[in-house]
Image (tube, rainbow, N blue to C red; front, side):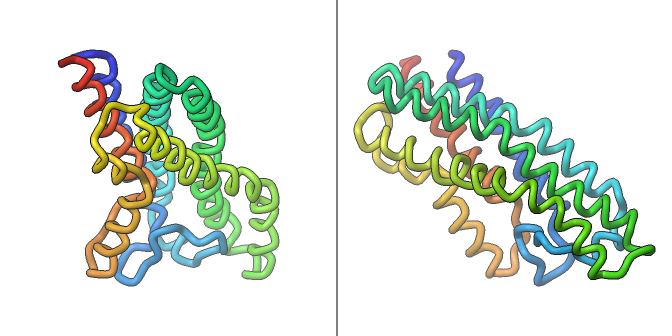
Length: 216
């Protein structure tokens, strides 16, 4: 097993942890949204506090392996296309400090809500938590552009250009197809895990495939 396959396996496990981190942020029961709302939710005070703490730690433990996976892909891409490889490294670096920050915001807001919901009106609570949104709005946008679009566009371009030694079907190994599949499953009433984490699991599989081809 070479370093690329080893990191890919690590990234696969890490991606699963990151995907599971989104589950506690979704309202329990049927008809819940996949992504937690930015607005205060009354159910936040109806579930155990540890729900949001667990979500943070799953994300904290899972994200480093996903970024390491992208960094190794960037190294491989850079061997044939230095510019594209550097672009993925920069994109990965940006994702490193926006990804966890965005997830922390989703965990902090419910915890703050639990502490103030009995003493303030819903309007006052909304105003108080709205301050968090003012600070986190820009990182949220940057995180979306880097983690969802940036990684997908760069890796897809690398595969199309032949900068990664994989077949064309590997174009499906990114967050966009996995999100579509998960949303279809959700429409069918099947409980799903975090789409972005699953997307990074796909990147880990891609790294494993490339690593195995190098080893041959």
